[in-house]
Length: 183
Figure 1 (tube, rainbow, N blue to C red):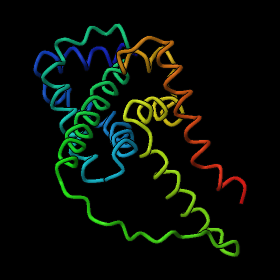
Figure 2: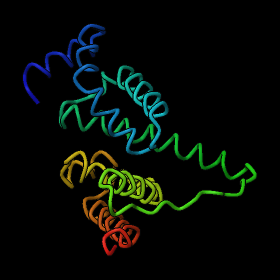
Figure 3: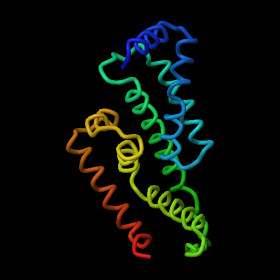
């Protein structure tokens, strides 16, 4: 973390809204991208990011600058998204499931854009089949580029548990996406 960012964080922690706005502008795109990958819904991801930044504003005085500010924000965003997903799961368990009438779309070999859209759709569906913890760890590692140590800190787990979680997620994704690879 640069000296400039530390100075901005200190100002924001002291109540300087302009300094906090700078932090929001610097990190909001990455936080949105992470939230969107976790929940696969743009408007919900926006709400999660907004709530995460509100939590960050309230807890900024607790940030000790021992880890990167980005990692700290990622932890808040992941926890906020996981809270949302848990609430949704509880809400959904009490609703009567409606019959699923989805049609399976097969990729057209003659049209590359259709194939790309189908692969993206199937990848997103496979991601949603992972547990919240697996999805979060996989996204932080392979999409956000965090180290195992950083992910373990963000998700508040040991590095060994983090490695196992990512390993399970990758294994499940390979199984889910195997039909795409073989066709």
